[in-house]
Image (cartoon, rainbow, N blue to C red):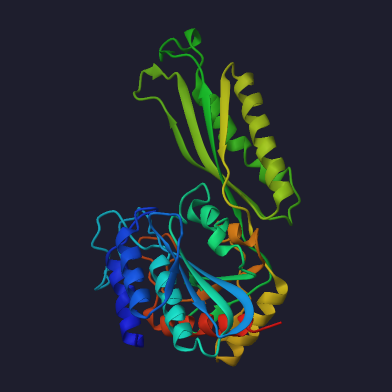
Length: 376
């Protein structure tokens, strides 16, 4: 596949985004390209997604490359000539880029399989954007990947131009947990609120008080974010509602802090609700763990990138979540930012990824896998 064909493949995926576990067309396109190149496939156990394998002629390590495939429920506003043709769906996080990048890496590795010592498995994963860990949690535990010794993944990064890679050891992505609080009161006429129990003051107090978990209950140098993103109560102007709803996200980089803040959030919800005569029902959807890059593997990736002529920067931490961390529970790895320019952040309706960054990124991951598979 030429560089122009690779870019055309990316643009085709961008035109036809598919949400988590709906990536049927994307899976078919990737499968077709892999099979045409004579690349073997392993059972994934999922309806969408693929695991490709390239076996070297000499013994060595088993290296895993991972790409996510799913889009977001976002209406595209980029004005690109290859903009999404699916209403309300968009590749606003660059997963079309990731898929094409790792497809390109697979094709390059197949061309050089006589040089390859060891094995490279390329995971095309569905459902990364799902709040419960998505496809990563399932595939990371797959018997087909049980022998992988190192994992690598890339992610579009608008903060860097094409030709720059962000490589940093340690925590680089947060654990994204979702919380829901239902505050139960007692409905009444708004002209006689004393005959009911109004859940709205409790919800308002809780919304403001939750921020003290971040500002007054942890070390200021320890990253954590708590955002209430959905607040709902009542249906009309003259009725005290039966209940109020809060939803939001809690994001941390350390497991002990993650657990403690969840416990404190639940305790605060119960105490504030009780103080207002209400009852609180609290639930959590626990997301994937934080992504923590291995220092030695980052050093190896940095060396490869510099040798290939990339500019290497130390990527910033982000409190976004990523289920690549599910793979890191089984083997060490590195999550690497790929400079794609564009100006607008991931998940924005005007997010773009510069296709010019694709061929270089594919070459980098192919070369990295080739080197690491043959390393001791």
